Amino acid sequence: MKRILLTGGGTAGHVTPNIALLPRLRELGYDISYMGSYDGIEKKLITEFQIPYYGISSGKLRRYFDLKNFSDPFKVLKGYGEAVRTMKKLKPDVVFSKGGFVSVPVVLAAKRCKVPCIIHESDMTPGLANKLAIPAAWKVCCNFPETLQYLPKDKAVLSGSPIRQELLHGDALAARRFTGLADDKPVILVMGGSLGAAAVNEAVRKILPTLLKDFHVIHLCGKGKLDASLSGLSGYVQYEYINEELKDLFALADLVISRAGANSICELLALHKPNLLIPLSAAASRGDQILNARSFEKQGFSLVLEEETLTNELLLQTVRRLYAERASFSEAMKASRQTDSIDTIIGLIEEAAAR
Image 1 (tube, rainbow, N blue to C red):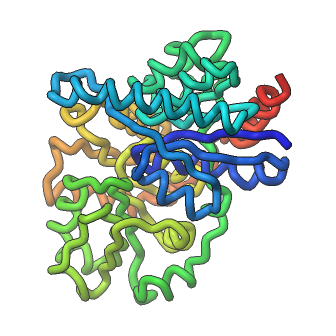
Image 2: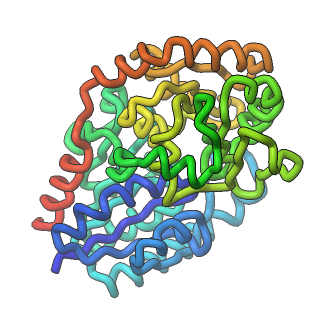
Image 3: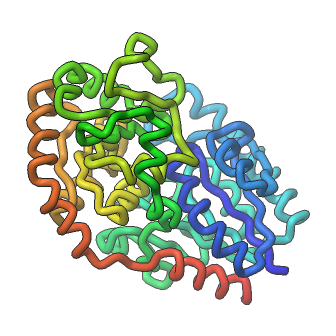
């Protein structure tokens, strides 16, 4: 039996593409294991699929000064040692990494144990974790054609991002029963990201009194970000995080307001959902979400508002424009040429496992 070790974590976006590969890997008879941090979101998401999970020590690597810069490298070194020991026990034929800081010691351990490793970069420019991992990788998959220029030519593969196939088969009626929303207004799905996006949450909640006159709102606001004062508000439902029912919520939604993480927007593209993207600001990140959002805007898939320019009136105007022009956004997405990312990545995994 062929064995594969999956890794990636820190946010749901570093886990869900791995989940998208599971049905095909099981079809092909792979023995699947997962390596992530001791108690990150990846553990919660992966253990639901009855996959053996191995936790390792994880530390964040930063480009800026922080006192944790002195302690976190030791956590990474500890994680590397744990990854090597576990890998020698599991003896995988191939490692597939979706990135995030927990993946760095796993990829380095794969090289030490002479196991071919494939990594996937979702954003337009490689993040720090993947930059550190690329020299140890056999192949590097990416989402955007623009990313190829940042990768070694002999390793780069334009694959697109694996999309969970069940997302394409949602049931809008099931979502109505789940949310309790009436069938009298269009529905906006607000996605703040798995860790919650305070700016998006706050902006949407400020305009709720006006927004709810014309729309119902389903709000995925992130762990610990529920607002008890809004419980019971007619036409508004809020959840920390949704997994099983997400496909149905997508089916019900007429519009989506979202951050611009690469995996999230690739899902919106596959579902042809008219969307408003509010990328994480460059002040709070390395600016990758802004690049992702502008790429989608340029292709006619999305409207974009930057966090720094967000006002109540501008947000309302943009939501109304998106709804009025929703058909043109859907048509642009339907006309886009989707690469079959799961087939491409599974092909690489099979090739690596046979080496």
